Image (cartoon, rainbow, N blue to C red; front, side, top):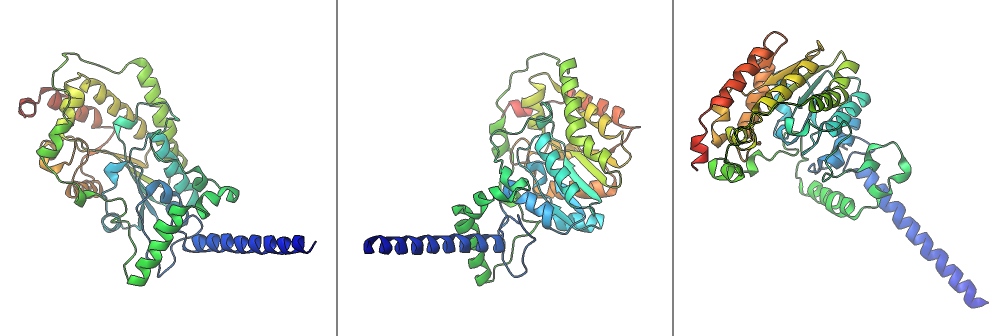
Length: 358
């Protein structure tokens, strides 16, 4: 009988200690809150910002801002400080590398729902992620749904996560003690300084070199799918928030991309038709702006501006922001058809032989 009392007392003590430890861990994680799930950053803590799909929703939910930078990896090198200076705003960046229109549209919508002060959205419109069903998401991308809902009862995946506790909370405490400043929206997800540029790094991605001789256009089924996707994941937000200015842009992929992924395959006409359709849909709204940089051929044809077929330098990213702020390379209802006609003619007739010879 005495043994049972001892074991009962021991069990109660062990459970109490375990409960206290679990409570302490949850309190520490929730207080530091490295993914900003519960609150904005605490002054004095040096935050690590390097995990967009886990941190974006907390950023858009809890930070103070009136402008949003979003899109795919082609938006990751934008510096929020430059956006602030050019547009007179206070911006945050919440990008989704490899994100299809659904994921980015959802993130954009949540930000608009969270924050009534938003007056500007800057977003890339990557055509490689456009021709899908409206609900399609990148199956290889992380999807931490427990951070995006309002259900506190599934937060244990965050509060009791070893990576969160040791890779983030622990290291943030160390950084704070060492006087390392917190990361910011200039450096958040920026990779411009980490990737070398030039033909030696771009041309290995040129895998298709033999022209098919085809001339591919959009099919009726593709047109219907693209229209539905654009309306659900691009223009629905524009229509719902008429007081917000939406600056959407087609990112300037390099000439080697035009060659291996379009010219060789014969689908430049289809690509132009796709961009025309997206532009037509977006420009139905007075609070929307569309920018396209494929007429800046000095940039497009210079492989020293690129680290691969699609990703450009930090200087090109800066130039895109300056151009949008100045209204340069902007497509309007009056000029977009003529613009795309000239773009199609240029890339259909460009002499790609120097690329093929490499």
